[in-house]
Length: 294
Ligand code: GLU
Image 1 (cartoon, rainbow, N blue to C red):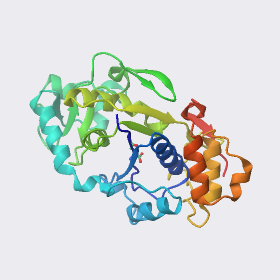
Image 2 (cartoon, helix red, strand yellow):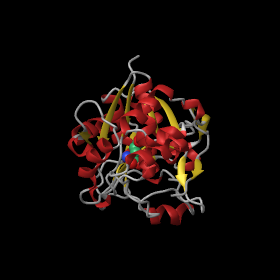
Image 3 (spheres, rainbow, N blue to C red):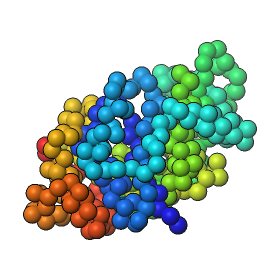
């Protein structure tokens, strides 16, 4: 099997240390396997986008020596492909329109797990726009995560039937990511553990669409002392493209690759070369979160 990995950031803000961890870990794993590494910008949610973020990703990754293969891809240019997959799910009877708002679901169920109202009573809510939901599996979804170990998620309890097309007409992340990972031939997905609970939904969609399931590895996310994930919401600082080496070094330490302190004076190229040669996925701590102080 030819290894194909990817980094798939959403342009909600500039890349930060948490993004660097996902980019670096996926890059190192791909290169250590002699594989290809793709860059895909997940710009499917214009209301959440920050102007200029997409354009800043390529030069930022280049400053960190993380060169991708092929042309970078933009999800906003691939919506026909998501529509084809959606049509297929509808045709197969795996998906159905749903006009319920979050508030209505909360009022009926007291929570966020969808109660299949629109499946049980089709057509009763046909005023206004509808989302499309996919039937979730009756059995827990199990998989082996290469870092976090055996996983089992019961989607009936955590989400219920989930959304693949939003009420506002935008394709949901779950559908787009599954279609792209398949069409781009992705064999290995290395990303932050905040996406671990999304993985069973993606595996289920792969099953419905008869796509093979890639291997998954979820690295710990960087969190502050209050246990909050580093993100735009927690005011994560943008990566400093003028000083890539200290941040790459810190990312390698975070990933428990134990770089030699002498490498802190190395060039970006030397540091990455060392990191590819010495990459050990099994040294990454199998935790969901790990403390990181800037
Ligand atoms: N675009 C997603 C994010 O930035 C990541 C998608 C993925 O790696 O599957 O959180």
